[in-house]
Structure formats: structure tokens, C-alpha cells
Image (cartoon, rainbow, N blue to C red; front, side, top):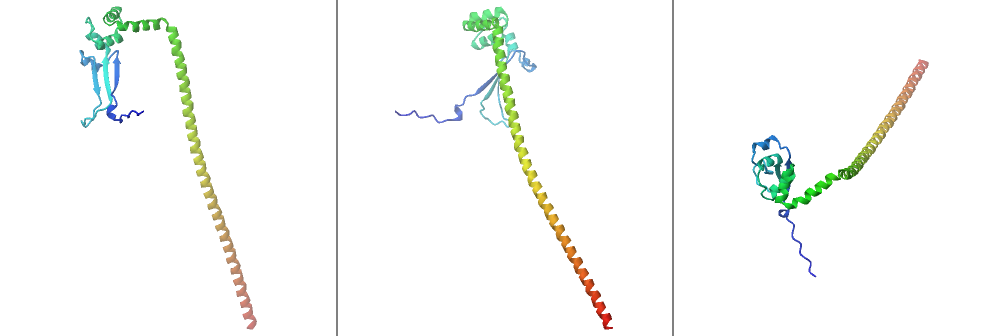
Length: 211
């Protein structure tokens, strides 16, 4: 059986990544465009060079969307989804479900979640406890890594201190040996001086006896 030939990898095959940001209360900059509720943005170079980057951004001010759609019919799936995210009044929800029945199960699931809030909070608390345990374990791991790093540094410092101590001990021994050598040299010079002095006295005595 012949194996299927693998397609050669190419960065061109990587799809763009879209970051979608929904603003419930949008910043002031968005209100400069009161009739626009979808802003698409891309990364650009400061030199103007054209490079196709994967990261894309879509900013959606929900509050501006609601103003533009007030008393209007829902047109298109995009507007339906945005209405699903933003609808708060029962009339709006009914209007959305009538136009797009597929959203009804989602509202029913949301309703059941709200009815079983205690169970949801229990699940949320369980996740938080797990998150806390993971956070604590991460902190412990980081502390252990830090301690291990400090042990390595301390061991290195101890080796440096031992090396320096040996060098100081060697210098001390050399200094002591030099001092002993100087003492022996001084003693030898003193003895020679005494011997010379004795010899001069002896010579003087012999000359007196001849005279």
C-alpha cells in the first residue's frame, strides 16, 4: 500500500488569528464613529513595508450596535449574534428567537444555568480551588527552583572562598618562610660580625705582644 505523500509545510498555510474584543461600554474613541460598530485592525510596520502578519483584531462596541439597531429588524447572522450578546429586554429576545429560532436552545440553557446558580457556583468554586492548588503548586515549584539556584550560587561562592582561603594560607606560609629566612640571614651576619670582631681583637693582641 502506497503511503500518502505529505504536503510540504509552508508558512502560507497558517491561517490568520483573529482577536475579537467586545465592549459593553465602549471607550470615547469609538463614539467618534456613531454609526459604525465593527472596527477591523491589523498590525503595520513603522516603515510602511508590506508584511502579511497573522494577528488580526476586530473591535465591536456593543453599546453603539444597540443604538444603531434600535427599532430595526435583525438582518443577517452577524447582527443576530450581536443581538444575542447584547439583548436584555424580553421584547428583544423574543424578536431574535422569532427571526432566528436556533438561538432558543442557547437561551434555554442560559435560563437553566441561572436556575441552578448554586450548582454552577459550586462548580465554579471547585474550579477556583483547583486553580488555587495549581497556583500554590506553581509558587512552590518556583520557590524550589529559586532555592536550588541559590544553593548552586552558594556552592560556587563557597568554592571561591575556599580557593581564596588557600591562596591566603599559601601567601601566609610564604611570608613566614621569608621571615624565617631573613632571621637566619640576620643571625648568620651577626655571627660573622662577632667572629670578625674576635679576629681583630686577636690580631691587635698579637701586635702588642710583638711590640
